[in-house]
Length: 365
View 1 (cartoon, rainbow, N blue to C red):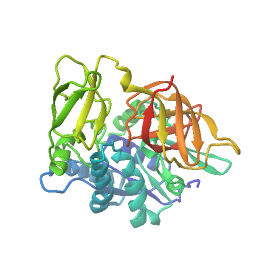
View 2: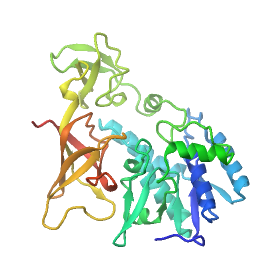
View 3: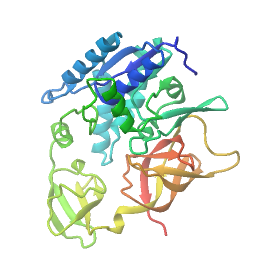
View 4: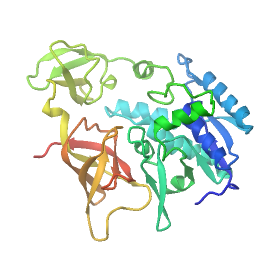
């Protein structure tokens, strides 16, 4: 889909500088987008400290500044039923969730399109990502700013969702985005970037888990000696590779394994313990957004990949066997966390193929 100035565009604005500049670029290109602010903040008892009021003020300012219609729409129930529930169930299973990835797939390009976006030719967002069309097929492409690139947060969307998505910021570095906001006098020019999980706002993640999962004391065990070093308040408060917040002396200590049934956290000491690393990443299925990157009659391709949100890409080989996928990394990688997602890219790191949930990792010499 190639947009023309006559195309109808729904622009999702959050009250931050990125979506504000994306809106400005749309208007500069001749579009007259319809603005939408999606309300998904926490409304549950005990979680009322949310920055949505300030965000809405910014959205109202942008609506007036560009003389564009603005709708404030609620997807709180859908977010709670699907994304928050997914987060809690994943944590309870001893895995590491990725709620922001699910938000893009299920909320911004999912339920929003079902209820409102279906009436528009495109849904524009302030994500740092790009699209390219090759032989008539849309592909998710990485942004020019490697630090801000958000393709790993978009790697679970479907092909239909990608075709409708529009990313005005994909070819701009973050520094230039700030400069545009300042030059145009946008009220969001100096707002800080949001941090953490999107639905929590200013709420501490551990406080959120404590509210819904409670506390359950368990042992912290030295995986090398078997010695009990201390006590934790629940395995769900800890992630593989975690270093801070363990309350242990004589470290640094790193979380290297969790036993859910025993509610036990295993740690290893050292500045660079080998148990943090692996060079094999396993996935039981992969969401290939556009087309499978495997050539005919081949079950192995060279790729680059990420197992967390980072500017760096790691080179490796992707193997498929009867629906099972394995990445062999060319170098040791840290903190392979089941429940997180391995995002797969072309060998030159220009195209994002998609991603699969990590089910395990290992070290093979």
